[in-house]
Length: 218
Image 1 (cartoon, helix red, strand yellow):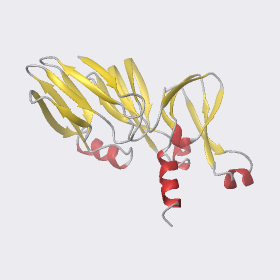
Image 2 (tube, rainbow, N blue to C red):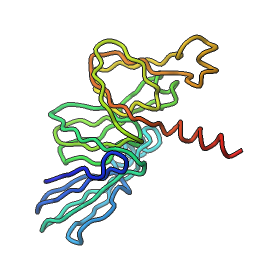
Image 3 (cartoon, rainbow, N blue to C red):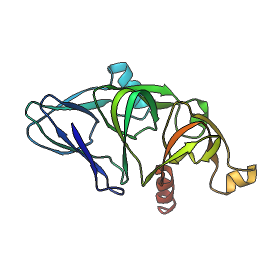
Image 4 (cartoon, rainbow, N blue to C red):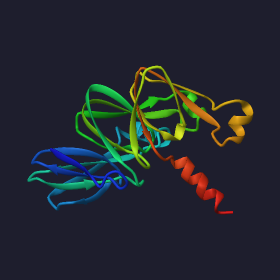
């Protein structure tokens, strides 16, 4: 299977060239275009109960789409947000993704619901994360640009800017500063990252966008 991330970094999309017999799994509504030789099969994301859990607890779609072909063809998928897309190759390893970041994965990758902890819930990011594990490539997207940070000790991140992280990363939510600064600086609660490990961040946050829009509606 050949793949190419195009139109980086602001309006990235993924072009797959599937060979006969190959399959790719994608998030619901990710398909932008495809050859007529591509077949699409929609199924529950891990069964009814697991699919419901991922939808209502993990912020993911209830259904996923599997694309395959018997004669080869092109498939183009994208994300809802304007932004960049990253490709990672797992080798019997695990990554955690924020809700809505997942776009596509190869058949050897499994999608599960991982416990994010009460710290994540307090930081308004939910109790659960999407846990991707196995062997194969995964593609995930972000709002804005995406950049990588190797964490050795401790690092502070606004919760809305964290996209993905390795399982060795520890997360703790706390105030950005003192009580006055935390409530009146606009920063509020932040995520304190404990390494070692790698994190992926986005240059914009959806919560920041919705907050800006709401402030201009009244």
